[in-house]
Length: 230
Image (cartoon, rainbow, N blue to C red):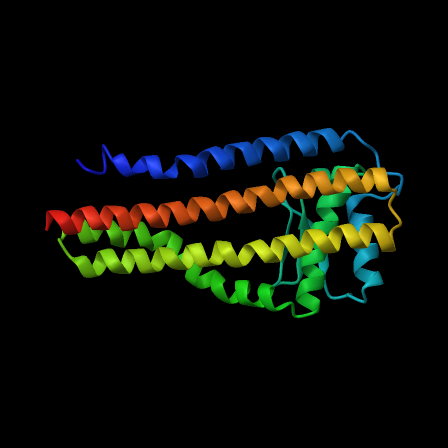
């Protein structure tokens, strides 16, 4: 009954509000600058190819991935995956997103420490996100404090992963702006749009970290209530 009427849910409200606001900002910024054609005259694919070659990176493939803003760099398979609208897009928004993902490829090529650490954390973060709450709730069902603590520990790995992700994403955005400014000589008014899109996207990662931290805090509070009842 406690989980059906969980008063600790209120702890998550700041994270939910920030996530909602961040998503609105991303949509607004991307929609705004997807209407602004870049003077570079390149598609996202052409920009990615040129930036990678300019950096001396020839082992990264560029592929299309389905979905909206599903762009990402896969460091394991060395693949830059771009959503259809950005693969073919010629807008300021599309080129900004593509340059950001190229930034991740550059991080990988340069052995950027925080990216390497995040890659090492992926299995632990996946395990934590999939099993933490299950184990935590089983601890309540079977009255086993060890399982409750184990669930909290596993979810702590998720929180750590989101925190490590922040500098990785911020650095990729910094690299993206620098590449477009110095390598591609993108005009200042277009760079302003790129920064707006990438800043909005960065806020979603901040919201994700906050949400993960608040979930962890909620688990600790619930565990405390359980301890009191025991």
